[in-house]
Length: 168
Ligand code: CO
Image (cartoon, rainbow, N blue to C red; front, side, top):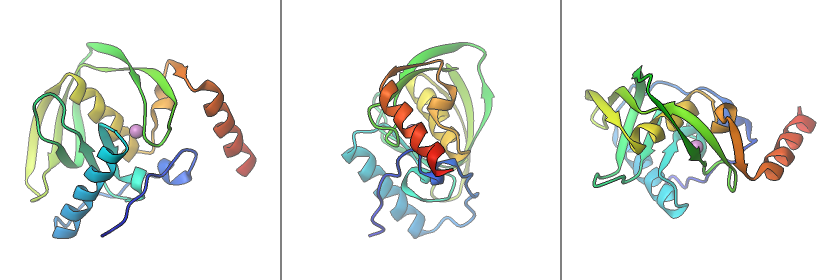
């Protein structure tokens, strides 16, 4: 058991960039399984390493549509469609806060699977949106940085930002 827990904003861990994964071992598989469990427990549809204090380029995407959950290692978005849509997003690291974010409808993704195999995939729909959100986490970026409007939890967010400033 690795015993993961969700790191919440404004914890500085969420702002760090993450390391490229170079060894695809059983420990990594274990981490991905535990990340999946904690994501389900907390009712999320995606989770990134930094959100559970794992400083590595790993994201988990929940079961969307008919698919099984997916693990993407070293994910890199190589194409963003110009065609975009605005969706209300939330995040397990920012409970009760929601905002409108504009993202590409389609992406091309390059990544390694758990065996280390290099894979290229074209992704659209909700899965593409969730992946863009999670890849941002790997670069220390949160949806509140990109939100055009905070739709719920403005007061909570203001309070958290205050806390951040008084700690600085
Ligand atoms: Co998030």
